[in-house]
Length: 440
Ligand code: AMP
Image (cartoon, rainbow, N blue to C red; front, side):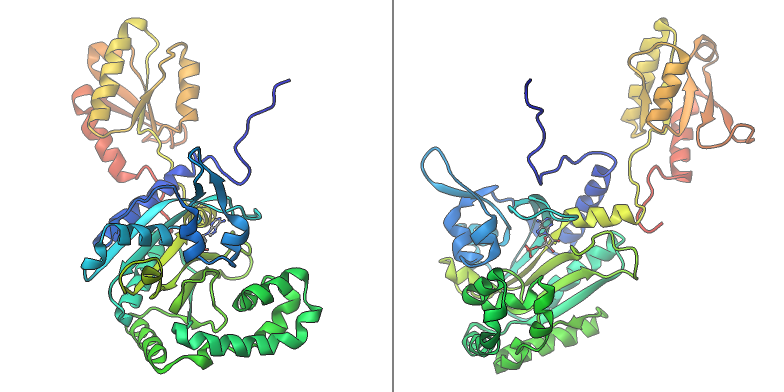
């Protein structure tokens, strides 16, 4: 027996009725990010493996455990991008964009990480990100954060909390790491093997450990905020003040360190924190993560250009919107049934003309009995139904049935002349939109 072919584990087929929500989120992002001065960058799916090792960091989970890395036929080690900040920086340097005082880019596409799967966590997942290179000023951080905030609102997501921290500048780190290691050292013997390894290889990551047993210890650990230099402190104060000016609420999360090595100064996450009981994301509540990475462009061989950006997980946004009752599937406005073969050409022509006017009209190319075509109209959830028969053809008028109204409703049936059909349908589309927007 031949083996059943299925999608690779952790990688999903995306289709209706969810795909319409994906398209809505993507459309809104393109529109809004463009308005905010970010233009799109599309980088290749694969990059030289060294790019991620040097940027994300060798001892991060992503690089040490989760990358899809393989040799191509030319013997090069290449990696399917686990994130898009490093590829964007690579492109920024490669194309000499450091000449520009400000470059703002957004990206949208699939990322790949070999992670343990659960709700909202997949091996091929999609991110929308926005990166701004050039300005070191706190107003750039806040503009970037505000974009994420207003975007989440624009697509109809409530109950997200902005968590904020500062990781300081590179010179602030060693003193902090020393304090952190001194704090954890007496307890290491009691750690799990995984936690021991984290302690050895990337101590700061203990701060966002998923191990419940470590939480009380982590809660008392020294925080980076107490080790910030003057410049980083002033920058962070300005970020907070500007957020307040813009009316964007935040909580200071002194343990927020994020899982990638390149962050400096501001780091932030948007976490879905609904009122108790309706959390569709379970523990995968982080819908967006970002921050400053002032040294990355230089470290990857480019000019000294500070930068700030975020990445949002599209899969999680769609999951959330769906759980909130968002239904965006397209329903045909009208289904035209024709049982008589000699009228088929007229019906197909009418369907085409109406579609060319932007009206979603459908028919059943199989033809056949009335019942079969009615069933098809019901299956595609057509809002109106009409039979194109000999008498309708001669009278040049249709009796249109509203499929959403019960039998006996006075508005169930309307007689519409062929000449006025397009206008009648346009009006019907206006009165009751085809889709249910989020939050309605
Ligand atoms: P990161 O690049 O790890 O900071 O992640 C940024 C955002 O991408 C997260 O907040 C998630 O919303 C999303 N994300 C990261 N990893 C995954 C994954 N494996 N599956 C789905 N979404 C993810």
